[in-house]
Length: 194
Length: 96
Image (cartoon, rainbow over all chains, first blue to last red; front, side, top):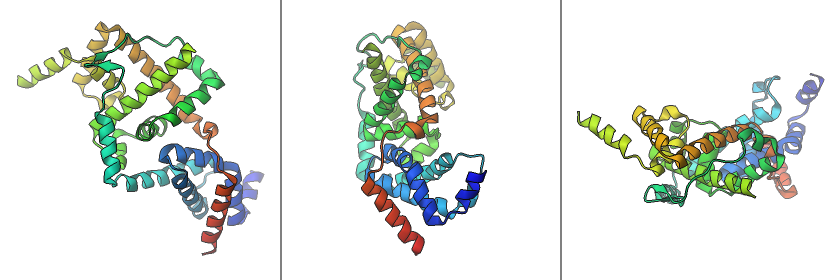
């Protein structure tokens, strides 16, 4: 509570400085994963901090400060993505990727027998090494697949909203999501084999 | 009647790739009843799809966990230059 009072008594410049030091990296990483370009991620963080300074009254004590800032950042990211979705070349690239066939299938059937993972999700997530590997695997997905996966699985947006943000049809979205999940499923399987 | 046969044909001829694509859809409520039925029946007769379904369920659990801890575990960091740019930009906008 005392810490909260101290924070409220800070000048906007001091507040911004503290946020940059305490949450800057996390906000930047969060934005970079979704926007793909450091420049765009920096802009989103900047707009978030500005927005946060202007609406500090919206910050409730029970919410962690970082969670609150990430909530604002999410909206800035979605706005940036909406602007991007009007770029025709980008849209065509997304549709092209959605039309490709996944490598693990041939003629609609499995190329090779698909096996169940040897570890459970609980066991995997208990390993710090695996958690770092999984975060890295998300970051290594191609831009569009990473974005679709983040919006649906990490941000929990519904299909309709994602389609509106990216300017794609639901069929394209499902196919892109399938591609993203196939790649992650294969990476996790490889990790378990090593 | 025609619709009935169309759905029956869809359910009976569903291939592994399409079944796997349906499995990747979350939440399941986004699927129609005949898509759920087709995938469910396909899985009964296809061991690989049975395993793939289980793996997707686990992947979903892992993603859920990752989403709850993402802000602490994202590896990217702002460079000192980027931090300075951010400070300068905020200072200038605050002074406006």
